Length: 97
Image 1 (spheres, helix red, strand yellow):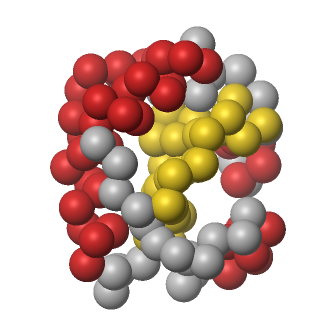
Image 2: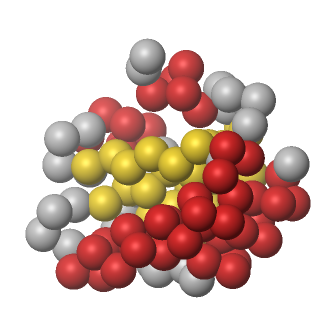
């Protein structure tokens, strides 16, 4: 399954754009675990390494990381540069359901 197929899902898809060398990016993983624990199957969460996926990163103008983008049916519903709280993410995902 490619990126376009993944984000075209009818359920919200949260994409975490990150890099292994990015310190703030490391703070995002436990937050996303909290989100997944609370929302379960109501959201799909994927991580995209910007160093390994330059075409996808360029397509969505990823200039700073971490960047979170919430997609539904291929459309961007929400975009956040920097670290977001679990509550903020859960609220945004819930608004798209």
